[in-house]
Figure 1: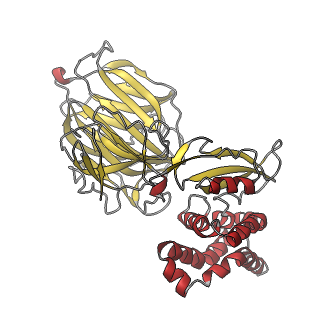
Figure 2 (figure 1 turned 90 degrees about the horizontal axis):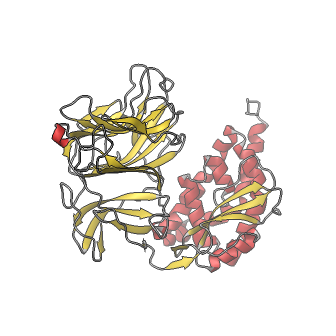
Length: 488
């Protein structure tokens, strides 16, 4: 646990002054954890634990629902009387295109089977639907699939019953990956009509029989958090909350005006030194400038138009590190020059943060990327793979801070892309490459965790790194010469 000290945090509010209603990260089971008030779901519909891909960030387990004609609904829900503010946070991954009637979030009344507030898909996009308000609002919100989505729903149920006249004083905000996609300030409140919202369907993936996903299509869920207050703690990837496109919810266990204790949820942050801390008060207001968890901050230099080598020198000279380096063909930018960077220049970041580069190069079959870890990216299929993160962290800590290491990295960037392209083109070659890389990644991880042990007893592993491309290449040639089927 970590304690945040300061002032002006205010009271958390909500049913529990210290902890949320629900926190479910699925790392120890399908039920919510003891870090929230609710420790068991009121209902689980067609959801089960999954350790397979995809996994969000550093997570090793999540919840998955698989569609079939007999299993159209997939949801988690709990019952509680809600009268004011509500905040819901979730990670979601759809592998299918937008169906016609899928609820991503819903409140039900406990005493009226027709009264509900839902965010739903339709033929025109994604809409906000209230039982007593017609027509439905917010057509045309785009559907996202085959990627992890971070969703935040911030609701105030209000005090005015504007049913039929669209004159309620409640509010609703839907934020997706840090960007607001829906907002409404006239939600109605059905209290005096005897239609209290009492069932919160945190994720209500119901699809009707007219246009369902294909049988076998799946939806994955992770990091479900709910509270009846807007006060919360989050870490983001930018120095202002509004600019943070990555937002990881933190789990409070003690809250006062001057001190908050949290259980850290790293989410997708492999290095918290690059993250900014935000305390959002009960009115929904974050601190104006994020607190850099790494301590000091730095300004990102402008390296667009630099050669890759010069850009990396400028980045490391600003006490930052090189992140993902994506190579792409360009008809206007000379080969080897930086086309774009992220974060943009003059951005305020934590000391030691990564700066991603897009570099002009020859057309490639796709083995590049991964922060220059071309072979590992090709072998593991993604620059976001944990194994690629290990090698990139090792490069940043040990190779880019040493003259000989910098020379090796430069030569590796020059020699390895063709090998990576060959690996990426064949699943057999990718399997061979993973086998070669496995002991190297193990040793690099050991070097990050225990340098004295790694360099003292098994430091010979460092000597193997320069020959990895050639070992992989020779093994691929050996495999291709055998009389067994190979991929084309």
